[in-house]
Length: 136
Image 1 (cartoon, rainbow, N blue to C red):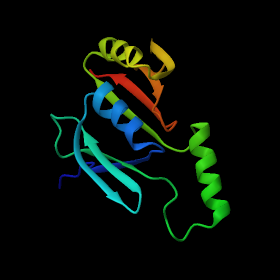
Image 2: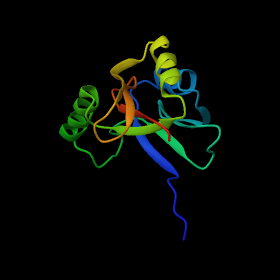
Image 3: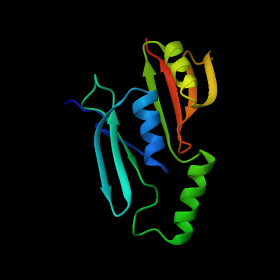
């Protein structure tokens, strides 16, 4: 049996800013851009991995959420403690520099972690934490 990750979901609070980060800075291809009722869902992913995508979605759109729950979700996103994703790059330092040049929000510069990984970290425009590992 083979199992793989097909979609991962992260909230966005500004579709254009999300596109600028994921498409323009990270270099992901846009696979889908769907608008509905003033909202946008963006599907992006690395060109060399068509089977793996990230869906950037408007936050707190579930009709079952109360106003208080919706406010809490938006507060967690604003604090940067709601969504997270770990990526890997075969050239961590070059990707780090490209993201810095794009104006991305640096959380941690590339460093060797005590648990054996070299990585860095950024926040996307919505505040989601993205860690990027140096691929083996």
